[in-house]
Image (cartoon, rainbow, N blue to C red; front, side, top):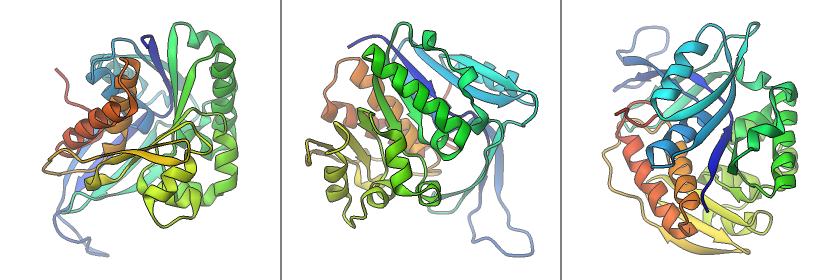
Length: 297
């Protein structure tokens, strides 16, 4: 397939706190705490570059407080950032609480990320681009949702395929399933996790949910955590891919790793099943690391 991947999404400062014991209310809980670059969109871009895609681009909005640091980290990861500096809002920040089972819970301050506006977008950003990926977080605020829809329509007009990562079952529930599905209508690929797939369809089984979603989106690749992933198209599950072995320390960014590697493989010509294998491999590498980004170097 060839061509560049353009990600339009979020750049976030992650504060990852790994606590080995349950949180103790109203007092101290010992934790290992690190401040790291993150954000679903940025993570996807970095994992796509790490997976071998030569031309990965990212459009995002950050605050002036941390913009230079984030831009340097993205370039170091092999991503070409188009970072819009926001002088009125701080860079988005997520506090990721990671328990002894490597499960993460997020406290999210979206900051500048969801202030990405139509003026930040230009159809020229699609020059040389073969695929557009939209972070689902953009769809949870009016201004960034308008921008994401603008990018989606521009891609359609150019014949550029589009994928969406639904990003957050909690935020989808708050926005409303129907509103979310209407906003992402027209995407070619949907990359939900199990919770998101079930929420978007109201079905209790992820396989059934993915099959139903594939009647609305040509390709659905749903991640199942330790259960691997499944690929659905034309109303039925086409392939089931097992998870790669991993010793999990932090599940932050595992879905982003899957998406980045999946899209890189597709752009290199892999079929959906092979791309899902690559995605599961990246997900396994991600959970063995602290934070949501691949290692540098």
